[in-house]
Image (cartoon, rainbow, N blue to C red; front, side, top):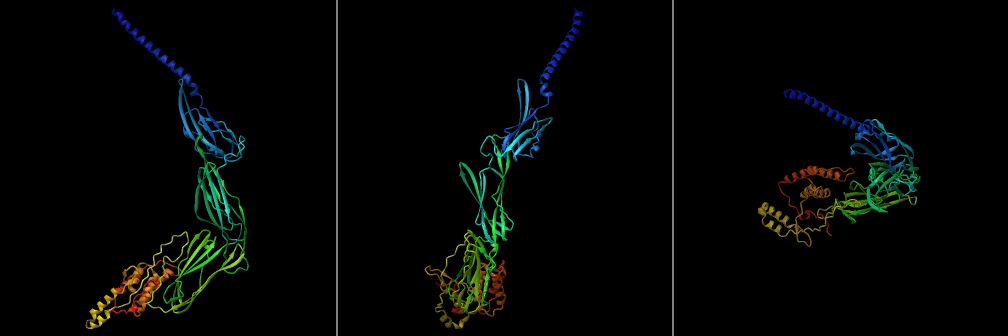
Length: 575
């Protein structure tokens, strides 16, 4: 029995080894069979196919190109650069998927891209190489319109119109060129170039105006822009219209991607007939349809006192004129006046360019004063005749200056009329003032207390300045007028040069031998030249204010009693 048991042990081991061998063989056979089943998809190369949604299209009409391969590859495996020559295309939409059906695993990678032909003709979409495989080329026929439709295809909903005032004009004469752009597409990188031409100066006027409208159920954006064009030479000149360039975004729904189709719109060229300057014309050449010359005087009376300022405001309005072509207005004033010219102010009122010139005229001596007229020659382009626009001069009677008389001060900030497109500063209400010159009984008290002349003099001066006040009719309020020195300091701090000049004249007449009169005179003259000179500049009031402060500190040891006739006159004239 023992021997039988011992002999059975190697038999069992051999059986187990045999079974184990059979199991490995079966497993190996199964693996071979599975490999044989899967061999076609592994052993054979992946196939790539290219297809299009249509092969007869219009120029710039968007259609879809699809490239697919039955394998899982990188999204960058497809190179679309061979399309650059004849087609425009967008960014491809890449998709990849893997599926298993009845134990069979399939993989697929697909590119979908929007594409359009650039020109009319027959073009070939070349073959694409993806790994070891390539696609077949495709022939595309591009036409003005598709053969399957009688209507033109792919016409962008964009329109550019232009209009101009005139085609026949004179050299130097400006005209308006108005552009109207209507866009009903989704755009990218849109731009509008101005019109151009040899011998033409072109300038945009104002900002673009934009509105929206709905036409036949479609929403449009309308952009309007105005140009001012001036010919610089005579003859026949070709005006090239404004040009719109941009890219219409096509594709979207139903397409694998979107692409940008370039669009250009430009109105037809226009031939301009430009006439030269007539031989018999005299004066500065100003060709225009209309020229208006106006003036305003402040104050408007026929009499003026020495030292009182007179403001003359001249307005020149020229239709369709360039600011650079506006004339310089110069008038020959007599030597008996001092004239301060402000810098001209320019603006626009509709089709007119407006220049406003303000002059402050201060008479130096009494007597008859004749202020000059002004005439501007211009060429009427509607009647083809020379015309002259004029404004009259003015005759004034200049009286001697007197500190007891009222002084009319023009409002520096509010007296210049500005064009409609510029803001107008608010006008402060006018205040009517009156000086009370009744000294009362204080002089009699001063005589009674002559022995105490120093003490009573101080009291008298204090009482006099407290009693002398300005009464505003109807208000009952009392305002103490400043002395000329105080008024100068206040006006200098407020940067009101006319008031500074007026107070200075009153102070100079009361202090003709003051040791610092010359220094103060130089400061006031520099201030007036800085504000009203031919070349106005920034003026720093610190030096003048410091000088006025030193004058107040260094008063004479003995105060001089000011008579009633030397009281400061109110700054606003009586009515």
